Length: 256
Ligand SMILES: NC(=O)c1ccc[n+]([C@@H]2O[C@H](COP(=O)([O-])OP(=O)(O)OC[C@H]3O[C@@H](n4cnc5c(N)ncnc54)[C@H](O)[C@@H]3O)[C@@H](O)[C@H]2O)c1
Image (cartoon, rainbow, N blue to C red; front, side):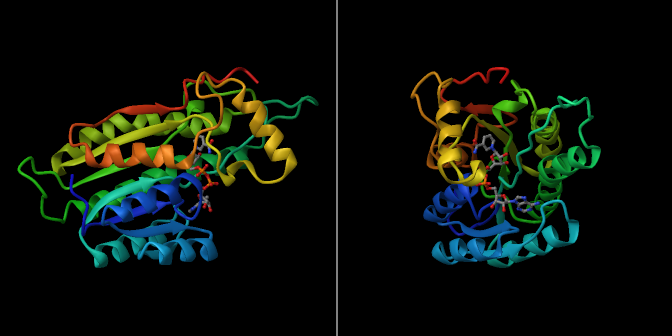
């Protein structure tokens, strides 16, 4: 699919994988709207790629609708990349026998899963109002960010894995739903990618070095650009639909 002159929404575009994806899409001529809570960084990146920033919580209907409207004002909305997300660590029952906090569980589900669906439904409704771009009747493409933890979640990842497993589970039915408007839906399951999600400093570097031990090859964390490359492939390759693609150096996450 040709995206030159179209608009694109990238949630979580103020950092990491979303930032890298927004830069790649802009380089292909898309007018990007960065949707994020980080206003300072979001505005800076939007300016650097000739796009716009819309401050929105992905789980908030009104805020995301405003971002969709902003995108439609830049050009026909053809692309949504759902990259906003938060991590979560905590065992179902901790060492003292205390159960995992239910509000914390719901918060992760709300941002990662409900937030992705919220952006997806509102963006799809806008895409449906655009003219098709080709003889197939195609109108757009959506890429979600799940995680390898959707399949091999580690100890302490119940909430995170549930949120990402939900994204994997909804990929096929949504692709089936959106066939009617010519919109493709794919999901990427990243392995361990070197982004600010792991924090900064010596502790974070040690943590990341330990994670890299289980990668098959190349024996390192992935680069955000390697994920952005897959985002672009899933957006532009017209025959990719309803798929979940691991981009993870072959890692299978161990129990801990
Ligand atoms: N980095 C990894 O190793 C890795 C692995 C598997 C999956 N992922 C997933 O990939 C996606 C991107 O991760 P990343 O590493 O680039 O993370 P990151 O922390 O670098 O960026 C995430 C961005 O999402 C934004 N965000 C968080 N909550 C939000 C909300 N409610 N509304 C709007 N924006 C919000 C943050 O402000 C941030 O800019 C996430 O969904 C993450 O779960 C990352």
